[in-house]
Amino acid sequence: MSFRNFKEKIEEGDTVILYLSNHLHAIEVKPEIKNKKGELIENVYQTTFGALKVRNLIGSEYGSKVELSKGWGHVLQPTPELWSLTLPHRTQIIYTPDISMILLQLDLVPGCVVIEAGTGSGSLTHALIRRIRPHGHVYTFDFHDHRAMLAREEFEAHGIADFVTAQHRDVLAEGFGEDLNGKADAVFLDLPSPWTGVKHAVDAMKNEGGRFCSFSPCIEQVQRTCLALEEHSFQDISTMEILQTELKVSRRTIPVRDLSFLKHKSSNNPVEEKPSSEKNYIVGAWPATAPGHTGYLTVATLPPQYIRTKCKADKDMMEDSKAENQIELQTSDHENGKMCIEGNP
Figure (tube, rainbow, N blue to C red):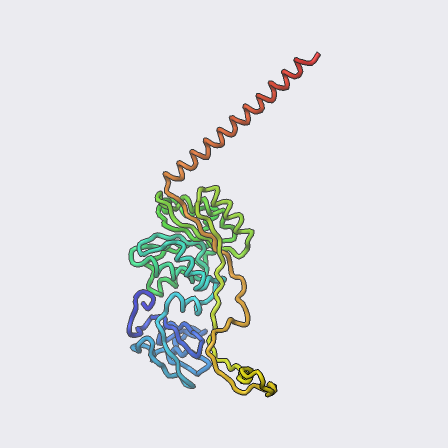
């Protein structure tokens, strides 16, 4: 399938990206489809540049130019980035700027085992699969049964089902399951209350530790998540927001006045009100509008088990010592009070 490996030519069953004048369309290459009556008819994809007979794509090279009834376009091989721009939205998705930072912060390499909750429209899942192939695996969970089923069908159609297991599960209430305890290198949570899932993330991570990341739109969610991470011995906790800004390269014309007469002290030539010439410059300009808020990424590191055990022991020792000092202080206050009472007539 087209998502599994890079290919030169389009085959039946592939998913291709049709590029039309800055517009992208995802098309499944099937010569025939069923209409509303359940009858098989020729698959003709309608666009603003006319109709495209999907049958004609079979055997064409990826990146080639294709003719439409009123124009032409290009067929591209899908990537996680292109798929994020064309996929059917079942939920609000995470886009490439945040996805790239998530992959970086989770320290993912081929062969890693990563857990994702929830699956949603599968935008991030496709990027995770590409990063951990060919020997890694993605376990993704969604609270909604229908969304989990659609995700499984999508991964199967794209030829990447070998690298992902999509399940319907309420991970906040039930965790990730005993089968995943101690197996994950990283955990990502895109849930309404990620702080509730922190304890389950600890259970799922390997004894060597791992990386944690959560995506939350509200800062109150971030605050509660950070408190939960501290409580479960996570380290290097940080929160960031990714706002992509693109500089627009353009040519600008600047009016220029001839001020050479100023070199002569006795010059009586008046300054002309109109510029005497113009110059062209190529400049990089900031956009007129700034991107809006998307969400906060909270990342943290779970240290190895022996470090967590040592830190917990040190913390318990400090609490015991603090409790003993408090008892001694109360006893001392009580004895001092008793001595004062006995010393009075």
